[in-house]
View 1 (spheres, rainbow, N blue to C red):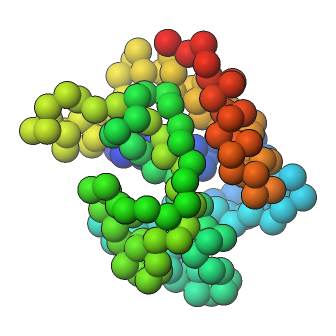
View 2: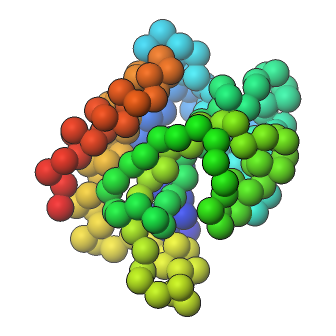
Length: 179
């Protein structure tokens, strides 16, 4: 399960936490939680361990405890509508069929949080989407997956500083030659 396409957001969080020397992950807020510093900013990282459809419960619990407004939250998630290895950042918007985002919208009472959309591509046929998303990355996917995750971790300081467009540009530059 850890290497499936639906978990690309967790993979990104793991690489960021490791690269920036965060504390070990521990159970908290119905999830795995850690904290650290990136670019002088204290960062709280959470990987909800509820079912994906209920991940907003975990996020809402942490947000309430730390009194975080939705606009200070960034969700890293898989995106079918982006080519593999591509990344987009946006604030707000609909869930586009992503049940984790739908749960966050409901539990936070807002869509006004940041999203780092990590492209996993589309299987081409709607009937294959569920199996594709829940399936593991193929061996060939490592050619774009590892460089993408490294680029996200390397550019995380820009995200922490609130420079979302610069983060997106930096990751795109670092991954432009990925197959």
